[in-house]
Each structure stands twice: as C-alpha cells, then as structure tokens.
Length: 49
Image (cartoon, rainbow, N blue to C red; front, side, top):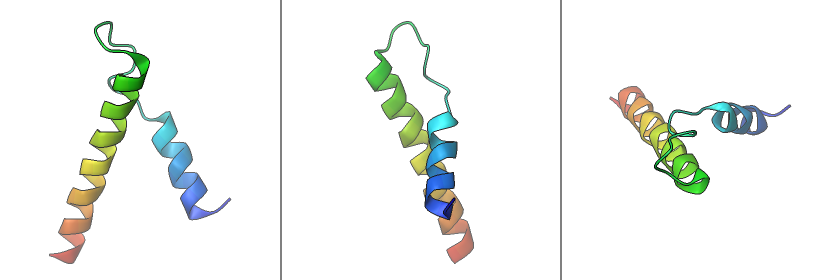
C-alpha cells in the first residue's frame, strides 16, 4: 500500500458530519473532507514555521 492510498483510506474513514440529520450525505462528506484539508494545511504550516 502506498502512502497516498493509505492516506486516502484514513480520509475516507474520517467522519464528523456524516449522519447529521440536516445534511445530505454529499454535503456531510464534503464538510468532513474540508475539515481534513484545513487540518492538513495547518500541520503543513507548522512544519514550514
């Protein structure tokens, strides 16, 4: 398994918004992925100092 496919697997397994009754599945998944994207950007910024 490559690093990219492992990261993708982790991303697909992350959920916070999925299951929220007021969101469609697509919107909930989008929000989850946006949260992961923001967290990754923050971590990269910390590394870059």
